[in-house]
Image (cartoon, rainbow, N blue to C red; front, top):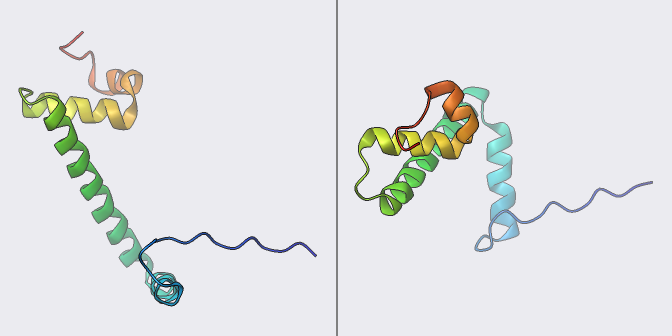
Length: 89
């Protein structure tokens, strides 16, 4: 009979017992709560990406930062298909 490989640790600074409690709580959470958590994580990721883009492009306007973000998230080809040509081209 095949053995199931061990699940990798999620966090380096968390005990296996605490991690097991977290996983148990996440599994027990209703679907709407999981969706809410994912939406919050997505919003945080976008904020972090925008901060990085502002650091790399300090003179860029808000619209240019949004376009750079679209290029990052969608890829340049898809961003062009969705938003049209960038002004930088």
